[in-house]
Every structure is written in C-alpha cells, then in structure tokens.
Length: 139
Image (cartoon, rainbow, N blue to C red; front, side, top):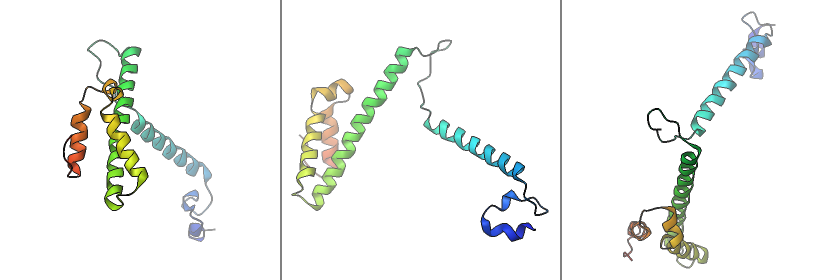
C-alpha cells in the first residue's frame, strides 16, 4: 500500500516513503514536539523575578515579597478593569443596577485604607484618571 492511499486519514506522517506504516519515527517526532511545546509553555508561565544582587540568590522572604506585590498589583488591575467595564455598561444602560453597584464598590476600594496597604500609588489619583477616561469630573 502506498502513502497516497492513506493521506485521507490525516496520519500520513505515520508511513515511510515506501508507503509502509512506520510508527517508530512518527512516535519519536510526536514526543519531541510535545516536549518542545511543554518547554515553551513552561517558559511562558515562568515569572520573571527581579535580579538578585551580585553573588547572592533571592531569599525565600524576597521571593514571597515579590509574589505578594504581584498579587496586590493583580487585584488593583482587576479593579480598574471592572470599573471600566461597568462604566461602559452604564453608557449603554444608565439604569443598570449591577454596573452602578460595581462603580460604587470600586470607587470605594480605590479610596479605602485597604487599597493603601496594597500599594503606595495614590488611589484618588488613579480614580481621577479612570474618571477622566469617561469625561467625568475629578473628585
């Protein structure tokens, strides 16, 4: 049987040039592709740590501090995204209760003491920048 007879199955790479099934090469190539894909995926997921001082490695505490900062940044970014999404929703439907509630909650969050524990960036400044995006007056 020739390779061209099996092209319709979608597994033509399983056959050698003479048309005989050769799973050894196919499986080897497939495993190599899987390993390369796994390496690329792991590399994308790997976070970038700040450079350690020369001759020193990051201690566990520094690593934990970095992770906490990343989490705090993620919380603030998500709040800003929620605020923008709710404001866009309110532009289409000003009576949307859920969007009004989200706007009120995120505004309160940016002005809260909890926000101040997450970052040193002023919450009022961030909120004013977000309000400016929608043509609203500053607080």
